Length: 87
Image (cartoon, rainbow, N blue to C red; front, side, top):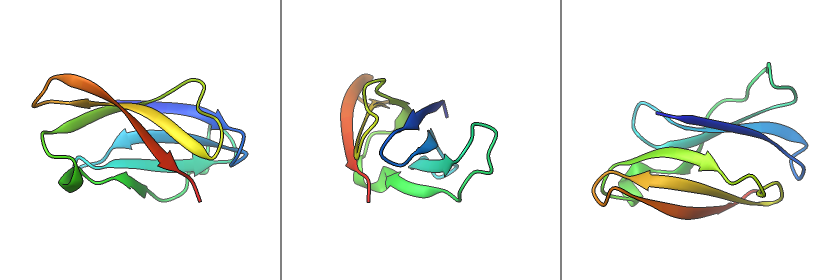
């Protein structure tokens, strides 16, 4: 699945979103672009969003505690704006 990365000012870390082998949206963080990267953190399980999710792209203005990203859906062949609140 496609990958999206950017620096997050709230976390003071780089973060990356992508779809894993189970088609879940996961996030990893790192202090620098070259890593070391954290283990996967589940953001959006595919079981909770039926229809085949893919391509989680971070919104360029999303740099704080509230993480916004676009997520595509195969069944509707459309894009949704998603929000996750970081701990």
